Amino acid sequence: MDLKTEYFDDGSSFYPIDPLMLNPEYLEEFAIFERYPKKDNLYRFRCLIMDFDSTPIETVIKLLKSWKVVYIHKKHLTSYEAHIKENLGYILMLDKLETKKKTKVFTQVSTNVIKDVFDSHYNDSVISPKAIEKVEKLVSQVIDFISDSNSLECLAELIGHDYNTHVHSIKVGWILAAFINANKDLFKASYDLDLKSLLIKATVAGFMHDIGKIKIPENILNKRGKLDNLEYITVQSHTSYSLSLLFESGLPKFAMQAILYHHESEDGSGYPCGLKGDQIPLIAKAIHIIDVFEALTAERPYKKAKTPFEALRIMMGENPQVEVLNKFEQEARQNKKAPIEAIVRNERDVKIQRLKERMMLEEEAKKRVEVRLKLRDRGMAHCFDKELMKRFIITINESKSFNLSELI
Image (cartoon, rainbow, N blue to C red; front, side, top):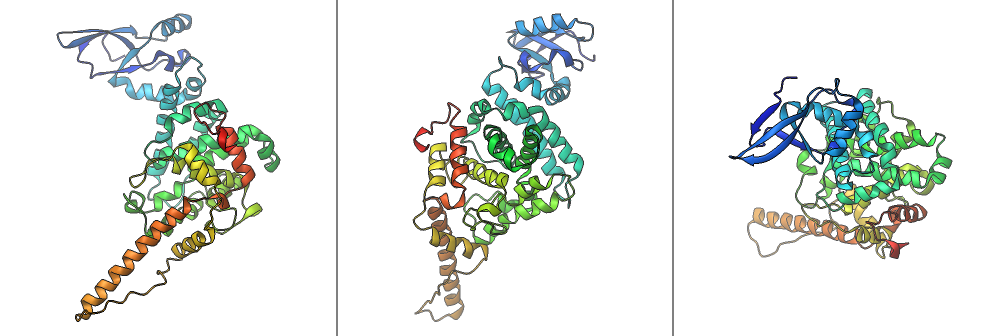
């Protein structure tokens, strides 16, 4: 080891960790320290175990259970992070580890993996099979944890936070795994796979459902306001981009279909193909429900997060103006100009007259965007399979953190 057995430090060189995060059978690459109270503005850090190989595992286990917090030197932070990544499944199944800590470590590791896949293929035309293997390896480690409906207690910790594409993808995959496992009778009847394989492949699809957004201009994705019609349909192209990027990834057909069709609506008003009812694959329907639920309950620069109850009430609500809404959606999708004319009178300068008329048309287009969003919030039941929506609410209501009994 390249470390001393004792340090006097202001604390900036050391990183606190929960001993429960350490798998005693795989501790090799870093030393752990204890911290003494500060004196003369410096803490004393004393090495507890420097060489795990020479320490009996029974002793290591006993010591780890006796400590509330230990420290590692920042020089070994990379080794510690690798340890967490390789032992994530072990950590998440620990009964004694707090829910918040499980949520934090799972989110950090998973987000890093997904972000790496997204960022490393920003300029590529296809996602390599090796990249998907990394995601599948991650999912295989955590599937027992995230597919257990009890894990939704942990997920509840993430509801209502700022929207982030990578974290959003993790939450969609997480909820999907729990949803399929809780409704295995329905999903196993639709897919000729053993449950574990189905859960893993479907969760990978959930994690990767928005990969196509790496091809959408950042100024649109990160816009701090409502999207205009052209921006709106540009974002909608992400499903087709996803299919193109994943074409040589080795994902099974049902996972590819789920990713491509996860914005199709039950009444045929969705995209990219306008499929309806039984034309839409079951897992695509499930991802659609989860995707919208997660998006509505996330904080955005231009809107506050809705509570799970509020979001689901909108999603279950029958929209009294669904025909008008679909007309506006089609208008946006086809990037049609608003069917109105603007005429400015009493303006002698023709150029100024035309400029004012164009400004009036642009203002009207913005109003129509706002109306479209308001109409959507009046009810989205036409978008989703009603039976699947009921099952979804029952599943997430199993968590004590979601009080949805009024909707069942």
